[in-house]
Image (cartoon, rainbow, N blue to C red; front, side):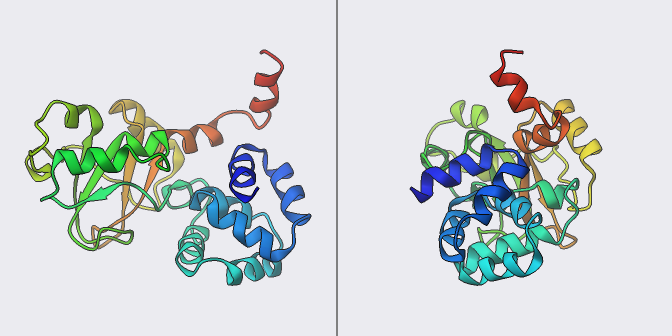
Length: 215
């Protein structure tokens, strides 16, 4: 089904992704890409012929298509090209209990469930002004009624969408992070780069094949 195919496409090498999508009609391709993570869908779209990609985008959910078009504007090896536009975002007045309920949702990927990002409204990318982040381990140390604004980590410096992957992976390693906020010139949160997205680009192209072979 479409949901399973979306999951499979996210894990396949680019060549196999393209081969499968080329065999789908535009409507089915749009349904499947709607279900993929925006950053993975954007990477795939950039490898399709421009007219085919635009035809599929026109059939997709308007908000999903807008996210993908935004990601396609950035170089693949920058924070803008690597980021996902669907992090867990809360207000400073949200409680620990509310944040925990959000990261427990089954549709939230593990890397995105590791942190909650706090902004001013609106609370979807592009958000209001970025205020800070709270790691889930920190959430576990505070009572359910505690407000996120009182436990923010403001020492982690966000990156700009133009930041190159070579700086991003060092920042993730230095701070022991699995997700790094990306902000625009107005200090608004526009996405999050996760460690799995960075690893996909740092590992050899054939790493999945080697892993299947027991290496």
